[in-house]
Length: 270
Length: 179
Image 1 (tube, each protein chain N blue to C red):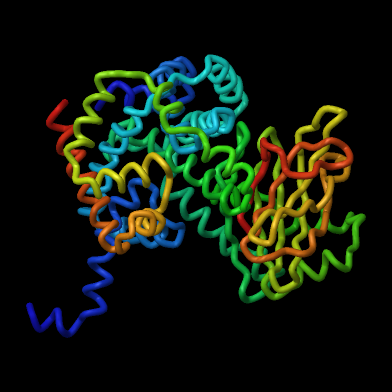
Image 2 (cartoon, helix red, strand yellow):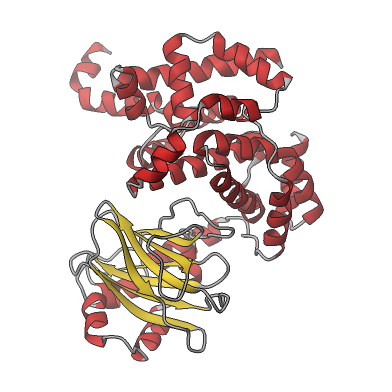
């Protein structure tokens, strides 16, 4: 026993360390990389999964002790929004493999080159139905459709092409609160992304969609989205992409606003 | 299986009447914990609405074998509130931070519904060591990471991680015994 410990100090640390994170994990007192590491550990450690489940009962009581009745209007909004929101089917082994297949799908082989990868993330949404989920890739725009959209490009087609053919081009799709799908292809090497949207919900006459880059480098307006033509918007090239940026979509007055106002109808971590 | 778990199972099949029942059972816990973490009532309403819709949309993901309905719901709510607070901080939106940081704790606490449950949890929190209790307060109710908690309390991160886990184990046992 002693010998094994001496022989495998690294392994021993790795095996023990995740266990101690159970409390921090259950309280969300953890950074995203730690969270991901702990969750992959959880998937292999039934004992840890049970501990986490039991500790969650304790945090549920902590939440209950902080209970405050929300304004009555919240219920009306929730019920109205639910009536317009399609429910997700249960996750089965069938859907899981479909997601995996799509994630490594043809887009990246044909367009994005060797280091292509699909990443999807969402910062907790501000608005009613912000839905950006990993599985959105399944419902996303296929490479073929994307190319078709892009052939109709009105904005600088050279800039668009440069991003799409970059060696690190990465595609992401997501859905917008209120309706619509966005497809983003970004390249950190080119410091730019191409944004297209389909089926965006029309805003009132005095508002338009405004796109933002938000990150450690500050909050920068990308611009107002042009009016859609037959449900397609863009492509729009956003340059000046910096590491750690989010892409956000807000409703703004026609000339744009000074800062991104809530609610954000899309917030994608790039 | 508790009543809430059964109702969530019905919601997964699109039962809007069950969703109404679920809403009534969880609304104050969801809004309360989101408000406690975020402090801003308007933003807390937005996040609570997102949480409620997530429950509607993803009810099929709930697995009653892996915990109670309330644990599932409050986990979603707390995580969203914390993620939102941290993404706001990432934007280095100082104005917002200053504006919300100044709300005295008592103002929020006053709005909290006084219940037996709250008293019970309070008693169990009181049974923790100071370091355990502070870790729970800062992490769960204020949304700090264990690294931030460690630096606020001037304690090594390894110690804080352990204290957090010990605290929850003790709370779980204390609250379980009080049921």
